[in-house]
Image (cartoon, rainbow, N blue to C red; front, top):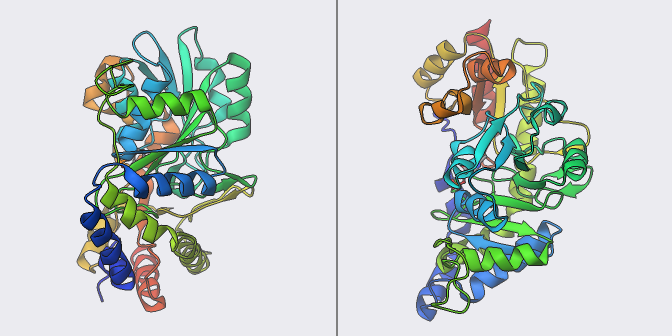
Length: 366
Ligand SMILES: Cc1ncc(COP(=O)(O)O)c(C=O)c1O
């Protein structure tokens, strides 16, 4: 048996006709940038996220970059975030000229540890960027308390967590802005790159819209130096089709997670720990295991897909050497990077496939 980490062809087979019809409609109209599909998607994602506004962007990365730029964050500013994330979180902070400032994670959830934030705040701190990793939101109440105390913006990197909740509140709706990615492997994935910023701050919304179009308002008159952060209409059309399946897909992922958690109980495999006030969308199912690297090789031999998110923490990346962090600075992150492993969790997995994955892992570790 073969079990890939993700099987987008299996998903496509269930929605092919709807997707082709939606793409064809855009091609017929030749409204390829912006237009009604993007506007409809923005309205629906804003409503789904309990936010007043949404701005489609060319990727999740550009959602983050646009948010930072629209909040006027740049050189001489500092943004606090986690070193245990995908590069884009930190890359965007650095690209604005601001300094990324890291704090360690909570080892149970892999999300930023709010207890460590206050001690790194300086006069230059402008924002906190929690990352809702693997589908689970960060502990937002203490983060917002600190942000309010020091008058800081909060940009939620919700690239992996669209529709996940914290105390019943949606990802993206608690901070100043929330950023989603529609990279194909996300729970809501486009047929290419795409992203979105959600916010309930009208002034920020207006800036985000102008910024994504080279800062122009009106056309050819540039208020700020922005970028081309626009979302393609074909991507919006595909996403509108997929949106109607999102809750079912996330539910199927939760069922798969429950299956694994039961299978692995009583073994050395440490399963994901979901905060009791959170609902995860399980964009990834990440276990911690001994002999992780040997297990990766074994799973490959057995045709089971897996991935290490993330093998090299951000504070140890070559391109961030100028930040002067060193090995040992964030022990929980460094430990997690050595132990974590994402295994297949996608909605179309059959019981047989899940059983094969779980049994293969258990037999290797016994
Ligand atoms: C945590 C996180 N932030 C940001 C991004 C960037 O999104 P994109 O790949 O759509 O640019 C991703 C996507 O992989 C991500 O996982």
